[in-house]
Image (cartoon, rainbow, N blue to C red; front, side, top):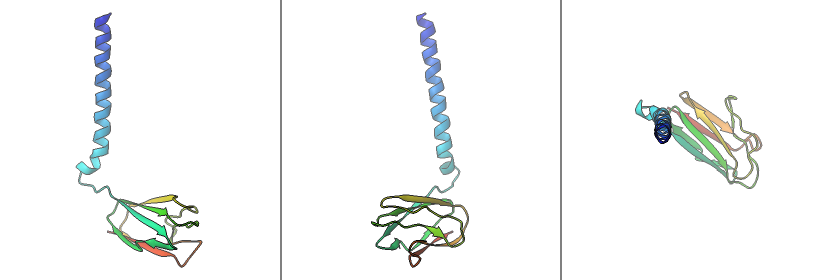
Length: 119
């Protein structure tokens, strides 16, 4: 019985190690293939987006965080993305998968504008 339990324990360890290796391979795969996995942040504060203009590589996830005491939105002028009303400390993220210039604004306060340039 002892030998059987030991073999089962070893088999379980092997299964766990194989699963860990497979997961690590998938996570590291993008970096290993030379793909850039990037993130960028835009703060919403004092009725403005900061930075107002942001340049990022293709594939970047941009996250907007509302640091103001009142709600704001993040809406692209071409309808590509649109957040819900973001309360204080709420976040909205979007992945930019194609090159281009993406202007956006706050639909609650339309004078608040910004743009993301994807290269």
